[in-house]
Image (cartoon, rainbow, N blue to C red; front, side):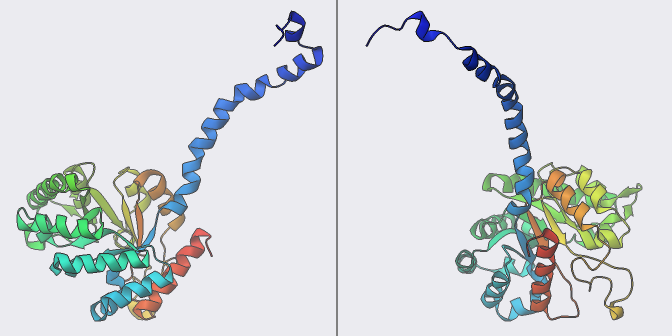
Length: 309
């Protein structure tokens, strides 16, 4: 191969101008790349957070035919389910049967609702770990607090200590504990503190504050403000709407998703950008339709809201 000469390395004026024109674009490339990558998760968020159903919404159907009801909700397009307290009576063998059905249907169980037994040291916590691990759940949520033990601030703090201890035992197994709010927890206990503020302040950061939107609204509280004040802790949200009025007029909790007063755009945006939400869960206590039709209609309304239908 001949040795190159100086003339071989020389740039023509046209070549120099062409290369010079690329400098601004090359200089901007890193910032453009950063902008593209930083905005990508925001665009993907809506598509990556699954929509599920709290199975209490179809409780009568579930009690009659568990496996058949799972098939039905999967056929509607739900991606996840949340089992409620009766699941805790299952044997590990039964939990494995249910998990097999979930896998066959393409459903995931990311959270469960539980009574105090699941957070009780010894056999209770051990069973919660075993069943939830089989089901693939991540969040072991207290569905409601035992009333007799939470009549004052001291009682709530003792419960928080128990939930915090359970959280520590769950963590090595990929689980965390959580609490599901009702109307009562938005009220103040002695010491002039809201009960939910007491729970948030006396549990570890990984403890889930599962938001029930409907009960928050009925209590006259702001769900968006609550989400924003607890970043990363609103890891699951119950999509329950609410409207003032009477049940006889198909108001209160009988309205379907989007028919009440919930500011869903703001709630969902806050949950995704700040709350750390991992799953949205449709919940309905009853409506003018049957349980299964309610579940189907609710999902259709959600997909319309998301621009997916």
